[in-house]
Image 1 (cartoon, protein in one colour):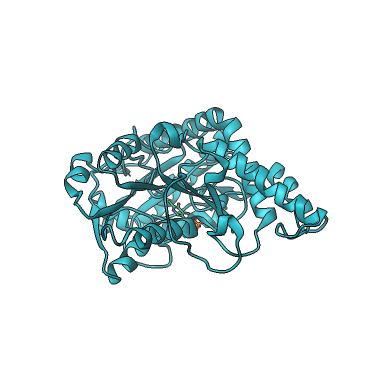
Image 2 (cartoon, helix red, strand yellow):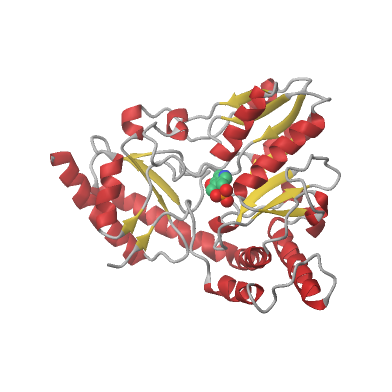
Length: 380
Ligand SMILES: *Cc1c(COP(=O)(O)O)cnc(C)c1O
């Protein structure tokens, strides 16, 4: 059966051009980037080229990019790294209730070590209140970490406003942009972002590689001790092939951004309209304005989300309930709870995230299948 993939927020397929660029670095060009002979220098050069491409996607300098093992590692590195290096100045951190677990659990871990964390609420659209942010700032606030775009409901935060407030109070601002990178324009200089996390496998590069942008001049303690790689901030022989893949994916994302966004938005809006027209009682979760172009999230009252997913799977459709990171646990999504959904509605939710491979015909098949399954489950 043909697989139709609508879970691009969980991961994406590696693009052909990306894979092609990576392949030589597994065998022919296998040198250790730290070695001085020519095949080592070839690897080193490939990493530096990739660094420029990642930097170019978000408009920072190449030497402000650190390669990591994943988006979660980028989040851990910078949040703990700043907390530890600034602990003399203060121990207060501000974040939101709807962060990815890579940020939430890192903050909770810091709380156990004596830091204090404020978790900002969000409104029905999944957006923070900047006045509440301003009121949460204390003399000892050292870091504001607020995600660029949410992985479950796609809500996009007022990043430039947040950055302005952070700057006004001389507080470092980090954003988890794992979902946003490659899906919306990001310019860290113009937007005033100090630190940013991104991940390869969410933008058509492989799993196991991520990047962290840290504005020059910001101190942070290193997370992995060992060799001197990544300006002595991230020990371990580099994942050269993965880094090359991430570089290529960023280059392509940069080049195709406008048309990519348009494609996703067309599919999403068509899907939303079809569902609202054809499925009685469907509840759209989150807002439509400040939202990732490829994200749709619905609840179908009196339908069990897990049963819905299994039935979709039987038709070759991959989608998600809430988030990939919470599937397997029966607790309702913390994000859907934060935007005010009852447990019952949260348990009947479906997240559909479009990607570059999806077509309108795929969406027709999805809607047709959904109508049939929702009807069946409601009658059973
Ligand atoms: C996927 C995701 C992460 C984690 O990235 P990994 O590379 O899988 O560790 C972090 N934050 C957000 C918003 C994500 O969607």
